[in-house]
Image 1 (tube, rainbow, N blue to C red):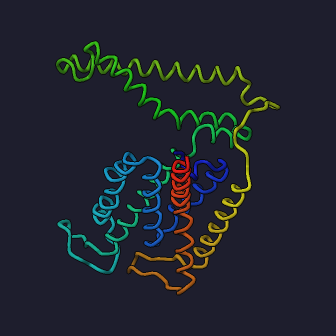
Image 2 (cartoon, rainbow, N blue to C red):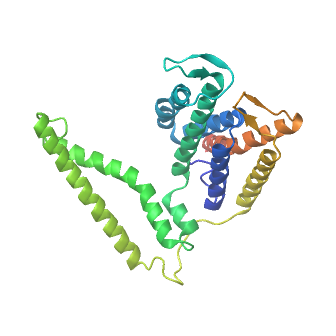
Image 3 (cartoon, one colour):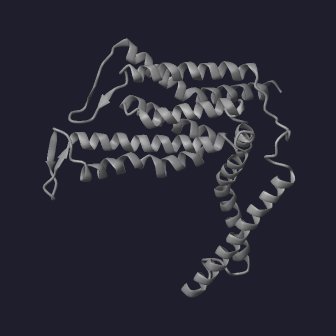
Length: 296
């Protein structure tokens, strides 16, 4: 079963991720941070299943706790003093909460980028920017694909070396170092050869030349326009709420935010709908797929 949101036009995917990433980086309100983090983790679980959940639990979710513990060691601003550190500097409640918020921000941004790499494949990126910035789009596409391809090739090379007894786990320390150097040499040679082959292949196809036509499987349909209009509407409403002070929140000198009643709540709801759009579409696609299987 494919992901419902990933099946939309690449322009819709790009606009969506640009919006949620900007809001995740600039909205420091605790409610917005919590919505962004929970939504991104939920979508990663929809995309990658247990693998995505394991990545979030092991690497991203401890990040807010780590930043919350480290920030008070360097930031001593705030009026609510909890205790004194061994260095004599005060430990303030505001610095602890700001560290937790900064950690949630970093975790949310990394989580959204994790989802971005799963949805915005290299062919989508080249489709969007191949005619505008052909060289840059090709370089970025190769860069985004390099890490997963490198990992897959590394596992293949290591498995081959393990079969002949030359893996990193075979032999003594000096022999392991030699085996590791041999594997590293193979990977470097493979990387350079792959880059040269890709460049020659794209050049022989006339990539980047003026007037060159290209086949594309993407067509901007009515449903793409409806979803794009919804994303832009929610983005404009949330941005207006931030500019008008509806999402203002202060951590220093004391923790507190301005309350704007019903309007602020509607901005929260708009942010929640925007961040959960991929999850909603994924669930809808899953229900459609399940219904079609039952009818068959």
